[in-house]
Image (cartoon, rainbow, N blue to C red):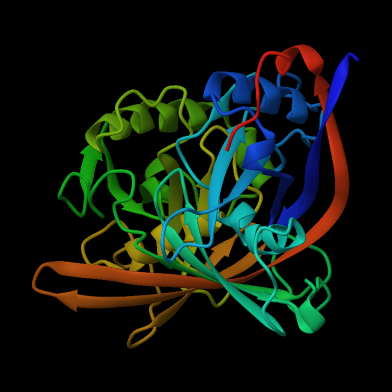
Length: 367
C-alpha cells in the first residue's frame, strides 16, 4: 500500500473552503501533522495541483474537530493555514469563515447530535482560545444547506449559520490595544495595532497612496505596496508582542477608506501577502472594533450607527459583511463584549483523502 485514506468532509465555510477532519484521525504531533496537511492541500505549487487546495490562501485552510473535554464547550476546533506555494502550515491564527462550517461538520461527523429544527453548539477555537456560539439549521434532525441567505463572495443562497464570538479581545496579544495606544507611527505611517478576534495592523489606505477602492487584482499587482506594508508589519508584530512574524500570517493588514456603498467603513484586507478577495470573518470584527474606538485610524472615516449593539457594515471588494458588535464606552475606552455574524456553509464532498503511507506508518493517530 503506497497511500492511506483519511476520512474527510470537504466544505465551504463562509467565503473559504477546505477539508474538515476528525482530529483523532490525524497525527498528534504537529511536525507529522504538518507533513500530512501539506500533502492533503498540495502545498508547494501555485495551483496546488497535487492536492485539494485551490491556489489561494482562502482555499488552503484545514479544520480539525474533536469533542471538547471542557465543561460548557461542545466542539474543539483546531485550524491550520496551509501555504499555497510554500510547504508550511501556520497554527497561530484561527479562521472565522472556516469556523462557520464547524457546526454543520460536527453534526455530519456525529460528534454532536442535532437537537430539533435548530442546533446550538459552543465551539472553542483551539488556536486562540476564542469561544463561539453557533446556530445551525437542522430541520428533522439533519443539517440543511438550502436557504435564502446570501453572502458576498459566494454565488446563490444557502441556509443561515449564526455565529456569535465571545471573549474575542486580546486572545493573541493579551489586550485589545497591545501597545496601549490608539495609534502608533511606524516608518512614518499611522497605524492602529489591535487584537479583536484577529491581531491586525490597520492603517488608512491613503497613507500608502491608495484610494482604498482598488480591486484585489490591482492591489496584488502592486509589488511596491506589499514590500512597504511587510516592512511595517514586521515591526508591528514585535510591538504587539508576537515576536518575529516573518513566517506568520499574523498580524493581518487592513487598509481603510470612507464607505462609498452605504456601509459603515471600507476596507481592503491582506492575508498578509495577498489581498483577500472578500473579507475575513475575524478581520471584520477587528475592523468593526477599530471603527467603534475613538482615536484610532478609523476616526473621521466611519459612518457609525447610534447605540449598542451596533450593526457595522464592512465594505470589501465584492460587497458587504455585516457585524453586530455588543460594546460599551467608559472612562477606560471602548470595551468589546461580543460580535456576531450571519454566514452560510455547504458540504461539497465526503469520503477519503489519500496521503503517502510513509507519513503515517510509524504514527498512531491520537486525539
